[in-house]
Image (cartoon, rainbow, N blue to C red):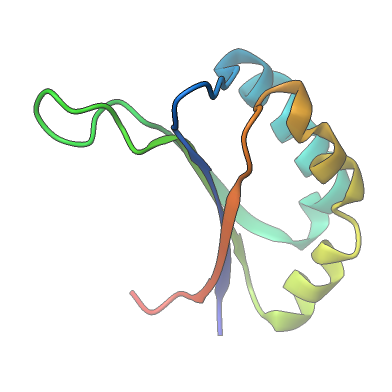
Length: 102
């Protein structure tokens, strides 16, 4: 069963997100720490929540794992990536772990 870890960075008043740093530096840290466990990654930059509406998230990152064992191993190695969050985002990220069904 494939699993995903999604990290959502809410856009709220006063939050800032450095997309350039995130894409060039943070994702390299993620790859270094857990690249061997990852099947794929995808990062979506929020543009809008609808016509004329700000996006609800600065970005959403999805990391796909082949199985629970791969995700469990990755989670033990995520410390440096978690510690890096204040370098690009000044809010509190949300996470969701899910089963990939489609």
